[in-house]
Length: 519
Ligand code: GLU
Image 1 (cartoon, rainbow, N blue to C red):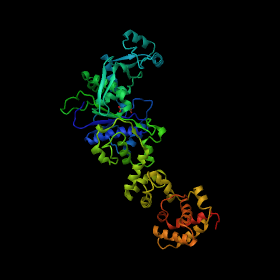
Image 2 (cartoon, helix red, strand yellow):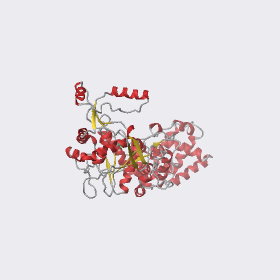
Image 3 (tube, rainbow, N blue to C red):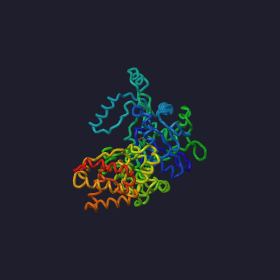
Image 4 (spheres, rainbow, N blue to C red):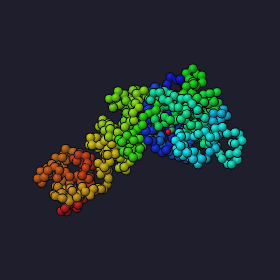
């Protein structure tokens, strides 16, 4: 429709409080299309289904988009020339369109109750007829309508679909798509309470906002012929332009010649489904599916973006690592495949681990800080001493974690005043064997050390091992459990060096009471 040189695309979520990774992939493909072409990315909140939504839920969704770095040029908070961008604030437009469609005879009032429609469906199932509304109230007379009203029935508004012929369009991903109109029944565009359905509000806004490319999930493919029909009717007799004017909303973006918007519908790209390991649509059964859960687990946004880009798109079928800038430069909807996209969490973890290894100490510390703050280990933002500590930890953690949150159990002891002992580690390494001697000898050796550094601590503990005739394992593990509370930590001498000496000595002394032969 609008033939500006640069794309105008949108992400149009129905807010449900959180962003599913499938939605994030849709947002990303649209965002990349906009950024690649120097165009405009519009965020439109499709909140016409008043029961399901609260303004809170749009907030969670926007926070997830921001975390991923998918910024929008026009949207509910940023505003823009073709708003408002919340459908709940555009009701007068949909009402004006619905009225105009009814007046022109394209839409009609239907008075069936839900029970009557259900009975119709049941009958269709039993007799092998296709499902869907059979058009019973298509041609009611004025008297019949009045009689229904008199009985207290409120009508929905249905759009007439053609009885025959084929709806077809060229999908960027799927090629030529055709639906027989005989299979598309008259559909509801306005509910009995006057609110518009998705099938009306969505195509109205796509035209009103001058959207020229729509990338969305394949599950919406069957809505497309119905929305194309709405587009066609909106263009006829300037119906949409008049409705915009009537509702006091801004006119559509104009085409390159400065005239009114063109006559073509946006092009569609229906993105392949995201599936889990069992090839079924990705859902909570498969584990985390909310962007915010991945954030809390410590996945980096640039890795999620890289990974989601690979869920359906490929550059050359081989390359898997892309920075966000590279994706912007290379992305094209033409290279989205039709096959279901496997959401491979192992691959995501591996990509995340690789990215963590690329970060400098300072960068890794910066990424870790919010994660440690969320676990209540450091302040948000961390103080100077905490920051130094986290930066000191970065090189010790880098090879040991695939997600940021995996650092938390490894380092929590460094930030806590008191040691939280893991019972199994105590039983294995403190209650048994020569732990008491090890702790005492280590305390003495560390107490006498000239400098408090990793190599000096290592030499001292090696000296203890030698003096007692023990291996490193038998020496290091009791010390580790005494100081950290657990049997797993980053390399012991370097980590001890990050803690102050007095604390280490005090912890060694405290732990002696847990050993088999208390001092
Ligand atoms: N609000 C719709 C949804 O969340 C948008 C579909 C579309 O992109 O057209 O499913």
